[in-house]
Length: 149
Figure 1 (cartoon, helix red, strand yellow):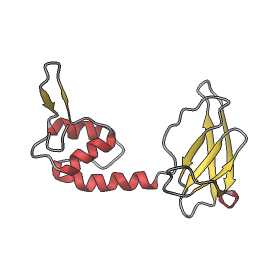
Figure 2 (tube, rainbow, N blue to C red):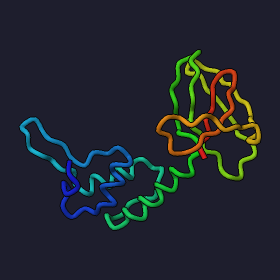
Figure 3 (cartoon, rainbow, N blue to C red):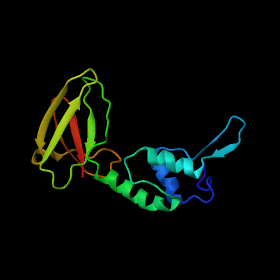
Figure 4 (tube, rainbow, N blue to C red):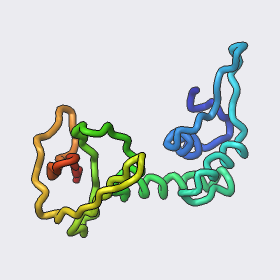
């Protein structure tokens, strides 16, 4: 849908919905464009429960800024699914003050592996084609961790 699909809704609310993967509208079976109600859109965004509450559309800019900051501060995405026995690179963004990277892998059928890696053991990795940031990493026996800084 176009940016003006929800007349009267701030661009910040639209961007927040897009960032969260929430559709603001759709085309029905008869080809008519349908738009989400603003109150329903705010209720859906609030249902995630992991960001500041949106009480009115005017709150969207502040909540969007906060959500973007949360993403920047995230060390690792919440969930990765990898195949057993396949070397996998996972992007990690440790805090600048991190001295040790704590690692834990939980297996879907139970059990887990935990280990720690001192950040001074991390070394630059070859820059991937099209990468905009340098990567740092340490190849572990069971998986390879890539740290972007």
